[in-house]
Image (tube, rainbow, N blue to C red):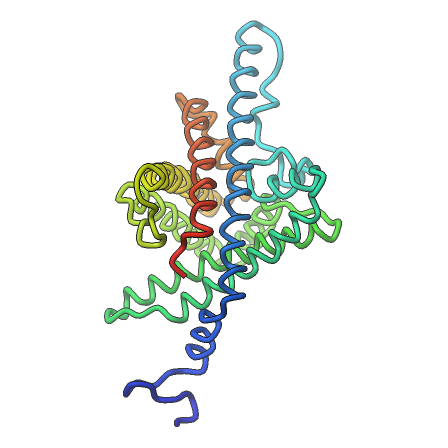
Length: 305
């Protein structure tokens, strides 16, 4: 045995890898990680429903404007300091919506526990990445680590709501972007963050188009399997589009030194409305996010852990 690890099969195993392997062998840990997939699915469904409601509001506002009345307030992006969290098409909007349900706080604690476990599981996945190519190993670790960070951040937001507080992803991203822009070299870091989010979005879209996500689950036989693949394809592509827009907006904020351009999922989805046929695209993305939520719910019991 060396000071930094033990030897197994002729190779040195670090304490971190040993701990990660031990964690992944825990049946309790696996059950909690599966709970994480389930609550993630519920949150995606809620975000998708909110996105569709934003698209419908945009259509109504456009019709009102065309007839000479009304305003486009329903389609405008809430400011970073806005407190109307329940209307946001992002995770904090979904969490705020849960608090209004009869079992809201019980569900919030389920989100906290499930996503914290799933985020920790993703950390073990990053630690246990095995690739002969060092560059590919680094890329995979970054991707797994990014997913872990997202799950843990949402778990933290859910904890704030569960304890009676309030949280806003848009406000957090805006504050971090302002700090980055005002810090020497911070704009470069913001561009890098935007490129990372864009890369994650492209990866999601690629995995959807190629149905590569099938490696992550035990695909059911027959019609249930075909439906699972179908919602997985639509869901991954839709989420990829949404994340790609977030990455682009972060890059624009860095290049223009305008932190108001930096936004999360809610701002990215609302930005679609301004595009030609944006309302239709937002409907499609909303349905896609609901599909991704359905896929995550199916993944909960079928995931290869």
